[in-house]
Image: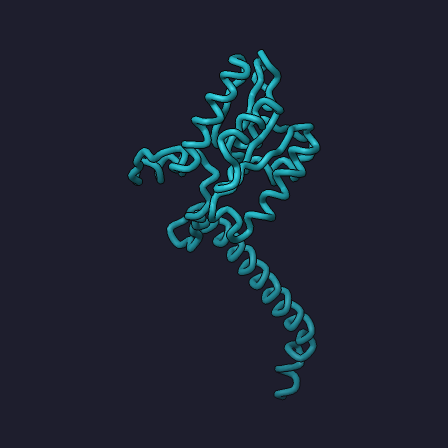
Length: 201
């Protein structure tokens, strides 16, 4: 009697199992889709999103706006372009150059990047911000000679290496390099140097 009652169920068991499996797969698929939609909604600015904008590098001052903000918050003061010994050398040089050729001029603390050029960007960046103490400029505004004042503390640290970089760049550009040594170059020797470097005008 019992066997006759449950026989239809036993015969349909494979079908029931198949239905259950299909239903579980369908539910799992819908659950995954719902999760992806929620994730996309969060990424688009939903209230539950934990996304935060990347922090700015406070030391990156390549942006002009950031530079302006830093400068506006800082204090500045004027200071001499040359120290006392350099000022004396500049005045003596200036007088000697004007006496030799009034069309020539002495420039002080000039960046190499202002009067040197190179198609090699890496090489140019190596010398761009380096300076020469004095530059002799002709009537066409071209620097013909560079003069370095070697003070008492000039050769400290990596000064010799920096000078080597400047010398090589100037040599390749065809610009003369000359040194004025503190305590050794006399005023008469300085005038003789100017007469040698500057054509009579």
